[in-house]
Image (cartoon, rainbow, N blue to C red; front, side, top):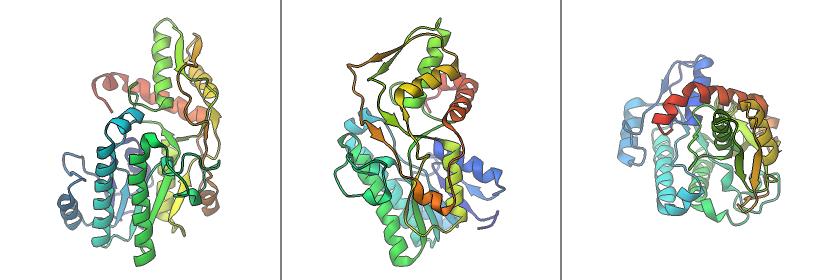
Length: 316
């Protein structure tokens, strides 16, 4: 790896891909490649093979995926399974055929069994059944992990998979119908604040525990994996610390300056009681997170305020 190594970032306009791009630029990397979905349809095998033949990237970071919430996963299981497998298979196999030596595959903590012990260790993969609401996406991601493991085992190439916990930050999805809990809360508290500090109603009891990682820290982990040879095929990326949803809500309320009440609608589901990652393997290799949750929420809120007019027009 040199500063002029040609690095292709698939999904460079998404929350994770754009953070990785910013981190690489800040470290002086000058030969970055990105293609929009209009320029390169990653579901099209021939198009991807042609891209590899033309651009000849030396390193590939796969931050591209078809993503969505529980409703979307439930309503479109075939698309979430097939399109994600098409995207990653084309990228992984195309990279292998183009003799790309280094490949970083990004997944999700949903690859682990629904009832796996806490905190989630890498070795729990494929030890039990998945969460039914997003198993289609999870199965696709598991095949990507296994494809990279197989290339690593058979061809001795440096293909590694990084599994992040819940991510948040700049370029997050703030759409209330499809966003995750943290950005959804941030938007709700902001809108309630400007609406005479009206009350904010949130789902469930507020007692589940969740772990959150600032996306810029995730980008640092990706660059760390690029610049170092990791001896295993799979690493969890997170903080190793979780927080009660009720405390998360109170933190976001303080950051946004909302003065109204928080009402918990206990008739709505809580979801899984706890979902914490064991991040000791990555820590042993020399990387750990640096952004504490409140600081990350402040940065995310600042970005949201700066982009609020654009977010009203464009669905991220």
